[in-house]
Image (tube, rainbow, N blue to C red; front, side, top):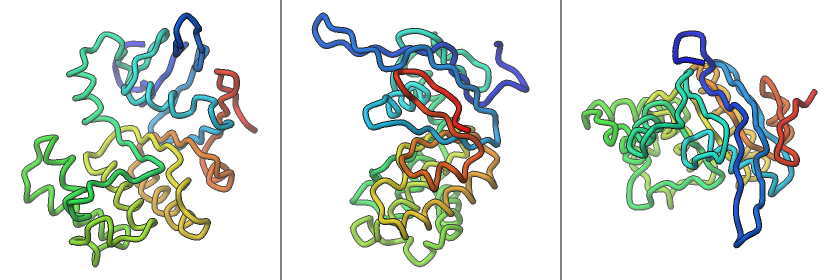
Length: 231
């Protein structure tokens, strides 16, 4: 598919990924096909060790596949240099992980400002947008707090809005509530879904949380290196 209007936000076509230990090959992804249009939120489920994180890393241009193609808005990313892959990640992709990975020496506000400033946004504009996003998720009174002074749920809310600060086309989330208790996770889920649905972006969320998975538009399961639909 050539780049152009109407292409899925994210498409994986026959994606393979093989890890090697000496002369032993360990296939993890065995021909993954997935089309994710804008506005759709898909749950990725599967047993631990099935390769969900690997799939997200390949989809997010953090790892190169050993076969097949990754297309972002119809553009085949296979031939891109590392520099251009980095620029495309910065423009089109947002990431949320199980652990928030906030920078401990910076405030909540600064953590959300930084990706914008790296992308070339002027400091004052980045500050205004960061404050607006944090206020939107109920953290208006926590702008100057460093991560150590935030609860687990608050830290993950900061991580979510940081991932969305540069208006990505695609959100990739790896167990975004896996490190939280049930009550806190429920609040984070509400925040995540509200913002993603309002933004109209595409999202692929790896999770063991079946409550979360059932609230999404579609569920796909990764087993034995292949994807199958869950009904």
